[in-house]
Length: 280
View 1: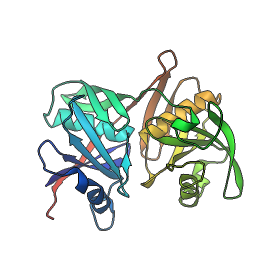
View 2 (view 1 turned 60 degrees about the horizontal axis):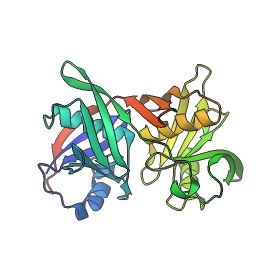
View 3 (view 1 turned 135 degrees about the vertical axis):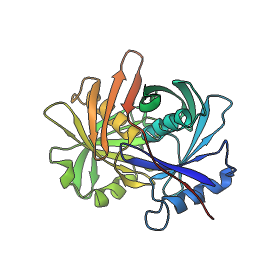
View 4 (view 1 turned 90 degrees about the vertical axis):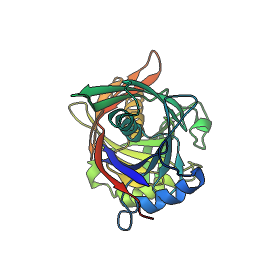
């Protein structure tokens, strides 16, 4: 079985073209765990299968490194756009991709005939606690105090296809013990389906510096839905005005929230790493 490793801002996944390869859906979760292992497998943040769709141009079936299924990944879907265009599965530069979180629209930017950047319509953010989900009352969960590891944190929770807890801090996020804090937030009782957590600095130039702990994958170099959630949370908390660059360990993503249409757009890179073939 042939595979391709790709990355978007350092968020890396193994991709399998299920239009050409026979990979039963029931086998994908276990394969994700096997391939994602960075010591005994290929090494990745998860597995993404590119599948046919009767609703869109293609369907993205995504699994985290622990085998759990994920509805949406901003960095991963940009790589889907590059894959299907640059590998000749489509000549379109405007695509619709079916995901577990619904349909997502991609606009491909070409340089010398190859995809150099992708803008993703990330849809409308969700603030209702029951829909995120977060176990809280009210219409939203913005800058609420949550105690984790003996410290009170101001948390803004929202969903952009998967649940996020955005935490703005004054100290440099690089000084935080992410390996300790990440799992404590991910498995906090407030979040019945676990949660992705972003720790964010607001920089003097208006950029948002972010570290991320993803449910099911742990620390990653970038998270597209996380960057999207961060910009929305920053706008709600008065740290941004609907648009900003988000600086991640793996690179930069540009996020814009169109308040009139309540749609968030993310623009960033996508790149091939290598191709290979699974022997067993």
